[in-house]
Amino acid sequence: MSTQDPAPAGEGQEGGRQVVAFTLGRDEYAVPITQVQEIIRYSAPRSMPGAPAGVEGVINLRGRIIPVMNLRASLGAAGELGDQAKIVVVKPGEETIGLVVDEVTEVRTLAADQLEAAPPGSSGMGADVVECVAKLEEGRLLVLLDLPRLLGAAAD
Image (cartoon, rainbow, N blue to C red):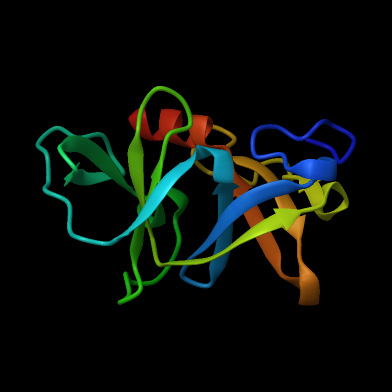
């Protein structure tokens, strides 16, 4: 995606994109706010025999069984799960899934001029799961994940 492309889901007013930002280790990631249903405190999922790689297990969320994906393992992020861990419940399509993250840091609007296409080869999962990268203040980078591709790659 170049900065000239129209912004996909999560686009706010005046071309900005609203995202939910979170951390995994020292890295910062985000997903479109339009795909986030809720954020809940982490509780260890029940493991499921035969679950795809990256799926930690399932949780019961108000009577619905939701698969929970370990983003740290899927994205190759270093570090251990901390006390501030959360499960971000997302629904990028028909399926609802929980994503384990270290900490949800903010909801923010990104301007189109902050976004750049992900560098080629930036994804080691066999599918391009990085939608784009946002340049933030003080040289920080925020990696925007393409949830349909990420979840599809995890299911393979």
